[in-house]
Length: 215
Image 1 (cartoon, rainbow, N blue to C red):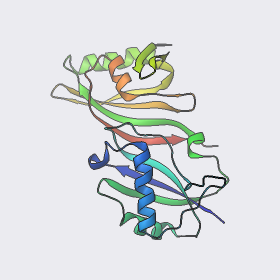
Image 2: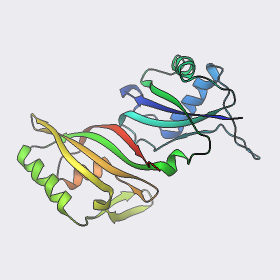
Image 3: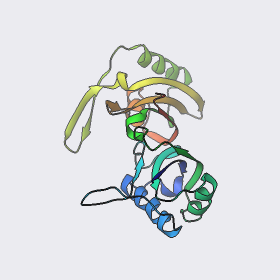
Image 4: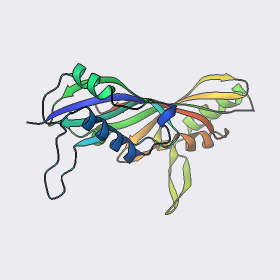
């Protein structure tokens, strides 16, 4: 019988440029070193059953990453956190571990939105930032595009923005809070929202929360 654990963990400055796949490998290596028996998928090419809720962009830190791991032998939350935590590198810290039912939908299927704090240059002042936020939220749609490796990607940015707010302003820089849609129907990108607000390129981006479907 396989046991499903959900781990909430943080990613600090030390690992903010590590790719999504390398984060998975990092956890797999930590499991091996901790002698935690991971469960494997079936088929011709079995692989460890481990998945992240939503990839984190390079250069972004987080206090809210979610990951599901299936293990082949039962472990208490505290034992897992202790054993795995000792094998993880600086910058990865386990915040919470809990058991969940194996038959629940995947993390990716449950994802609905993500929250961020983004710091960016705002030389036009605090009132400009508040006006820009209000203006964007009042729009019914916001046709947008950004360049991908495969060419321009066109979409309605407004549909991906659930909420925006000014967390603080100091010395020509604004801290913007944002809740963006994150799921199979599209995911908002913080740097694109900052660009739409007319602010400078983000100096700091930190994910503060991941919201899952409640049913």
